[in-house]
Image 1 (cartoon, helix red, strand yellow):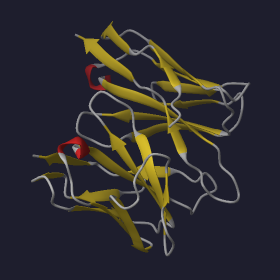
Image 2 (image 1 turned 120 degrees about the vertical axis):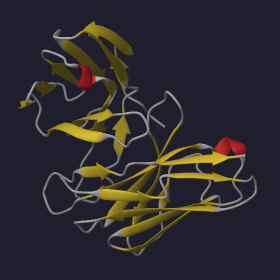
Image 3 (image 1 turned 90 degrees about the horizontal axis):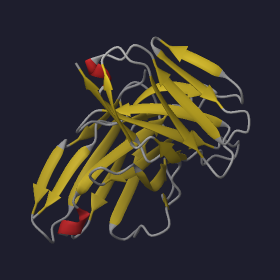
Image 4 (image 1 turned 30 degrees about the vertical axis):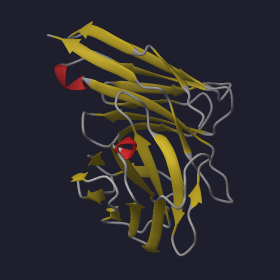
Length: 117
Length: 114
């Protein structure tokens, strides 16, 4: 299947700093990417849908000014957690939609573990 | 956000046993997906279902798309230790206008005893 990468895989930062997470589709172009957050022992919760060249669509309850999303190219989307606090510590996972087939399959990245001290 | 009800929440089975888990929704989906997630990793797609009533296999895994389009089940036959992990169902409403968000189930933790 298609490959999606994330960088970094793990980040530890101080409270109040900003952290940028990259999501790349390596062997296909993704017009749409999705960002999820997963707390321990819980399911994946969609944060926002990122469309190349346009503003992201955020799910209810997700602050767009805190979680900045940029989808500047067909293979790259970034999520910036601004002024991070300990409650933002979580596992952040992106997925990219492979639009080549009719199935609109989403492929997931390996995730980024964010720990805010 | 909405989550799909998945059961059982966890299972502890013997190696070689068959496993069955299901997922139910209050709303209709036109695509059902099953993923497996290992600790510290992203979900990996196991099986995708695109039509009500469809029964699809992938090795020892078999999944079915419910006739009502509100449920799906996953069976694993002859479980082995590497089947350990968390299994998530996901429903998707694929529309021509875009969107195509996934709604995930609550997950089933599978543990296999040797």
